[in-house]
Length: 227
Image (tube, rainbow, N blue to C red; front, side, top):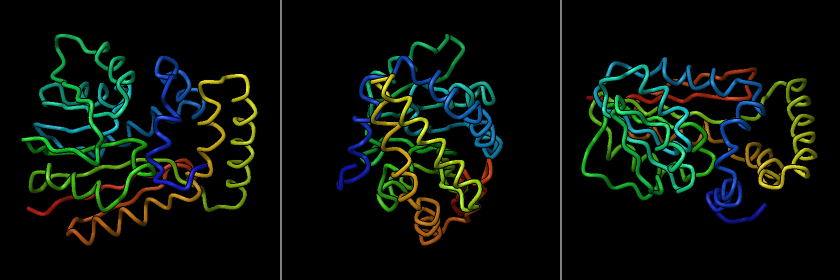
């Protein structure tokens, strides 16, 4: 692990494995990734515009489009190869556009009714990311963030740690995922993103709700901007 900002790990983790991402995230989460994304969508109110940050290959973006076919949806990601795959999934019926951009540098000339993201919090500075989100969020709009969390229950944490040891061993046979499997657990353990983002959101006047999923292995943080 490096001592710099966790965001420098993005290229290291996802620099050359875009084509296998969908399969790997499904297998390594035992299918829970799809369930977690459905839980994100449940928290999206009826709206006309949605911004999906760190959209990757478009897994969540396409699910949002299926639930809100009339909404204008914008997906943003920092990795070009992932965006290429996401764009390839779009059909003529989708109202989706994709943008290559660092979420912390986001500066669009429009605002949205809802901003979502799966797996971005641990990589970003909470203050910077939330400030950028608020600039692009309409009054009454919602920010919904999801990411891994280290379980607090000792028995579950033991299994969680053992599982990542196993993944680390598997990584030796899958070179494009070796660094991710090796360093991701430490990043998750040290991130403490839920409390950090909750604090920043509340300090900026948002009404915040937190839900822990899958025995504390994953969490959703939703903040609503006052009108």
